[in-house]
Length: 429
Ligand code: IMP
Image (cartoon, rainbow, N blue to C red; front, side, top):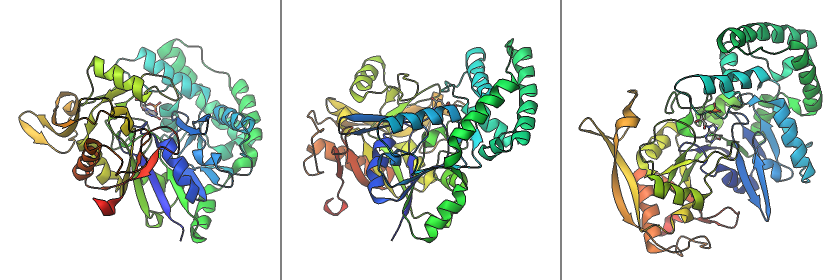
C-alpha cells in the first residue's frame, strides 16, 4: 500500500534532508516540495557525483519519480530554468518528471532587490539569503502577487506587473534612493521564462490527489527547518513560509487525513545560518573544529553555519509541533573526535526551569542551557553499518537522544554517501 510521508527538518534547517530524501525516494513514486524557494539547498552525493538542488525535489535524480513543485513554493523562474538546464546537462531526465504548480507565486527582481536593500540598510537584519523570498510571500498575503498561470495571460500579467512596479518603484526611490525597475524589461524577460517552463506547468493539486486515490506513495519534502517556520520558529529570525509538517497540506493541497507519517531529520548536533538566538552555540574553538569536520557551509550562499550542542528542548518541541513519528539522525560521525559531548536538556531563565520555548522576546537569547555531559567515543564511525557496530558511547548518546525527545529513531547517517546509513533497530534496544 502506498504511503504519504512528510519529511521535515527538526532544527534550523541543513539537517541533511537532501541525502535522506534521496534514500526514501527509492520507495516512492512522487516527491513534492511544498514551501520555500531557492533559498533552500539540498546536497546529494551519488557515487562520485555531487548534486546541489535548490527548487527541484531531489527525487529527480531517480528516473521515473514524478517531482512536483507545489503552490506553496515561491518560484524564481530564471533560477528554475538554470537548475533544469544543469540537471539536463548531467543526463537527468527532467522533462518527463517535473511538474510545477500553476498557482505558485513568482519571484521578481524587485523582490530580490527589496530583500537585499532591507538586509543591507535596515537595523536588526535577519541574515536572509537575499533571494527575494520574504518580499514575494509578503505580496502573496497582501494579494498583489503574480502566480505562474498569470504569466500565460499577457494582458492580465502586464496589468498586475505595472501596478506592482509603480508601488515598488516609489518605495525604492523614496526610501532607498534606488532608481527602480522597468515594467517592459521584466515583462519581456518573464514571458520568455514562462514559455520555457510551459511544459511543466499544471494543476498539481489535482495531480497529487489523483495519485493518492490510486494509492501511490508520495514524499513531501520540507525545506529549511522547524525553527525557521514563520509561525512557530524563532520569530522574526525565520523564513517566510510554513516549514513545519502542516505546511505540506497547505502548500501541496493535500488534506491532513491523507498523510500517513511524519519523519523528522535531526542533526546529531545543532547548526543555524543567519542571525537569531542559539542557546547551545559553541565557543570559537569548537565552532571551527565542528564546522570544518561537518562541512558546515551553506549550499545556497556558502555562508559559514553557526554550530552548537544538541538541544533536546528544541527537538522535543519539534516532535510535537510536527507530529513526528520517527526521526533520522544525521552527521553522527562529525562528533567522532570529541572527548566529551553535551546535550541540552532544559533551559533556565529568571530562576525558572523550562522545557518549552515561551514567546517572550529575548527568552532564547537570555536563557541558559542546562547540559548533561556524555563521554565521547573517540573512534571513526563513518564506516559503521549497524547500530551494533557503533562504539558503546555512541550507542548511549543515540539512546539518550531518543529518550529525551520521546520518539523512535529510524535511521542513522554517518557520512555523505547513500551507503553511510544504517537502521537503528528498535527490537534490540
Ligand atoms: P530567507 O528565507 O532567505 O528569507 O532567510 C530567512 C532566514 O532563514 C535566514 O536566517 C536564512 O539563513 C534562513 N534560511 C533560509 N533558507 C535556509 C536553508 O535552506 N537552510 C538554513 N537556513 C535557511
